[in-house]
Length: 187
Image 1 (cartoon, helix red, strand yellow):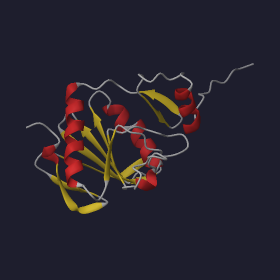
Image 2 (tube, rainbow, N blue to C red; image 1 turned 135 degrees about the vertical axis):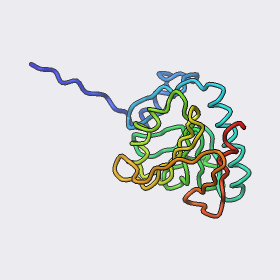
Image 3 (cartoon, rainbow, N blue to C red; image 1 turned 90 degrees about the vertical axis):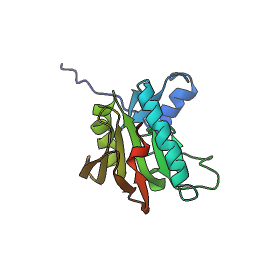
Image 4 (cartoon, rainbow, N blue to C red; image 1 turned 180 degrees about the vertical axis):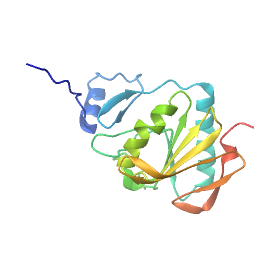
């Protein structure tokens, strides 16, 4: 008899239960991507600095119109709960006390990538596209640019382009807000 190997995929509820009962330790940085528990890479100093720069810049630029979440869960489906570096989400009176934001609350997701670039532009990109994340940005630490992905269709994005320090760009949800890409990267 031939045995068929399959992968056991988890739901968001099962993933949370693993954390609650100690299977996933509090010090382990994990996220759930399409049913798979993914260990997150340790942040090198450039990654942490660029994440901080984006968060600070967005908090000022989007004050009063959107909430900025840094490395906090976003529920995209019953099998996907990532913790993106930056998420620009709809403001909520209780600041998501009762639940995590969902794709309906989401304006923009930003991942900061150095060692994780391949994962972020392949597996995460496919998961985000399938979840209909309309505006996904990858801050490429090594190349010093932002890769922007829009118009999700199935597991890919129909529109992809690069912006560099010196360029201005807008988030789809806020075309009136000009974002200076140079603010993200050290000069």
